[in-house]
Length: 79
Image 1 (cartoon, rainbow, N blue to C red):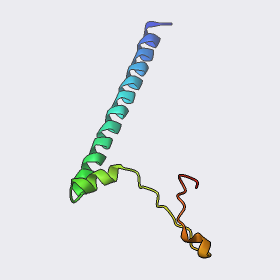
Image 2: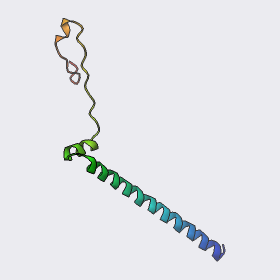
Image 3: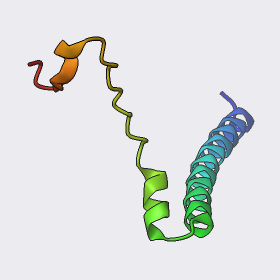
Image 4: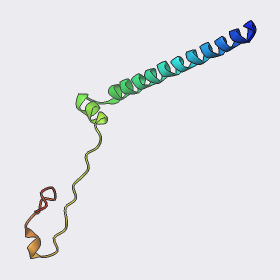
């Protein structure tokens, strides 16, 4: 390889590295902006913390179909 080819190859590698590092910095900045926006828009700290947690699934109760269904069975215990 000639000296010119080596310089061009080195320049391409350097530019690629700079582009990769820049994209990582921008992604981190966007994440920080998103978190700060959520914190700013929340009315209080409790609401802000609720935004971070995944929503809890709601338990559904079975409808009673007869008098034998008076006893509530706990689905977790499989009684």
